[in-house]
Length: 50
Image (tube, rainbow, N blue to C red; front, side, top):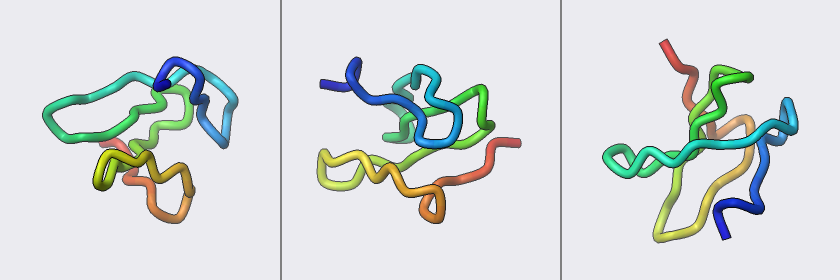
């Protein structure tokens, strides 16, 4: 299922970070959280990457 998800900002692929439970968009420099097994693909909920 994760392969079907894309970044809502750039429409690029996402990379799964198992340690942080996030989907990372390198193109947008954002990490989207996964809560209770459900990806939260809202820009307002994303964490900016350093």
